[in-house]
Image (tube, rainbow over all chains, first blue to last red; front, side, top):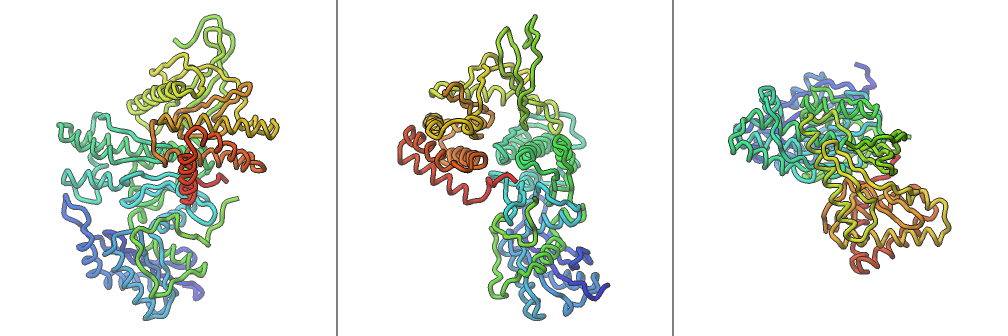
Length: 336
Length: 220
C-alpha cells in the first residue's frame, strides 16, 4: 500500500443495516462489512429495535472493517457518517459512533447524505460520466441529473417508493422484508397478467394505488404469483416510462441504476430497453453495493474530504428528512 | 380503415416525441394530422395496448373539454383506439415559438396576452395542460391553437396550474431570452384578466415556489 494513500472510514446506519467500510482516495474499497437487522416476517423495520441492533454490532462491525482493510484507526484521515435521510433512532447510533471516533483520533468528521452515497458508489463501480440517475430503494424512487452543483430531481414518486411497494405488499402477505428478491422469485411461477393501475404523471410515478389494488386482487382470490408478477411489471414499466421522459428531456446518454431495488432484474431489463430507444447505455451499480453499505458512505466521504468538507463534531446532527437536492456537490462539475 | 383510396401523398413524419409520432397526411382528400402512440418495448403487450388506448381516448376527451371552454384546439376527425391514433385538423402554424422570432414587439405582446387569456380560461374551467410550452401553441393568421393534450388533466390544484406557468416561463426564457420578461409579463396580464388579479397573483407565487425547489431545471 502506497504511503500517500488517504483512508476514510464510512459508517452507515440509516435503516436496517449497520455497515462500516474503509476506502482509499484512489477509489479502492479495502473493506465493506455489514450486519443487517432482520425483522420478523410480516413486520417492517421497528426503528428502536433496529437502533438497538446497531448499538450491539457497531463496535464489532467497525473493528472488523478496519482489520480487513489492514488500517489502524489512528491512521485514518477522516470518518464519514450518513446523517440522513433515514430513521432517527438508527441515524443517531452511527452519528454517535462517528463523532466519538472523530473526536478521539482528532480527524475530520464528514457528514454524508445517504442518497448521494448510492449515486457515488454507482458512479465509482460503473465508470459512468454524466448519467441520468435512477435511485430506487426503500427510501427513494427518484430520477436525478447533475446541474449547477447539485443533483436535481427530475422525477420522483408522489407517494410511496418502489421499495415500499414491494415491502408493504410482502408484509401484508407474510413474506420476509426486504422483499424484492422474494417477490421476484414468485413472479417466475406466474402465468397470467392481471390489470392493475398504471399511474405516470409527466416524470413522476405514484404507487399507492397500485399497492391497494394488488392487495385487493389477492383478497378477491387471485394467485399470489400472478399478483406479484403483475405488480412488478406495472411498477417497473411505470418507472421506465418516467425515465424515458427524463432521458428525452435531458438528452443524457447514460442511465445509472442504483439503490437496493437496482438488484431487480426486470427493472434492469426495462431500463436497458429505454436506453436502447435513445442510443444511451444503462449502467447498473455493482451488485455487491446495491443494498445499503458502509462503502457508499466511505467513498462519498472521501470525495467530500478531498474537496475540504468537514463538520464540527458538535454540529453534526442527524437529518432524518435530508433531501438529496439540498446537498452541494463541490467535487463534481457540470457536463459541458 | 384509416387509409383512403386514390390518395398519392405519403404520410410524412413531422415530429417524434417520447410517446407519439406526428404525421401529416392526406385523409379522404383532406390534409390532416395523425398522432399515433408508439408501442414501448419495456411494457408487456397487454399492458402497452391498454395504456396507449386509454391515453388516446383521454387526450381526445381533454381536447373536447378545452374546446367547450372556448379554447381553440384542432378539431378531432377520428379516434381509433385500436391503433392508438387520433386524426385531427391540420393547423398550419407556425408554432408560437417560431412566430415570436419574426414579428414586432407589439405583436409579440399581443400573442402572449392572448395565450394568457386562453390558459386562464382553461384553468378556470378546471383543466390543466401539463406540458405548456410555446412549441405547443400554433398561431394561424394570428389565431392561437393549443395542442398536445397528452399530459392534460382535470385539476384545480394550484400546484398543477403553477407547473403550467413555470413550464411556459422556462420555454420563453430558453428561446427568447432577450425579451422574455416582456413576453411573460404580457402573458400574465392576459392570464390575470381571465382568472382575476388575485388568482393570477397566487398562481404566479406558486410558480415561484415550485421554481425554488430547483426541480424543473434548465436543460443543458
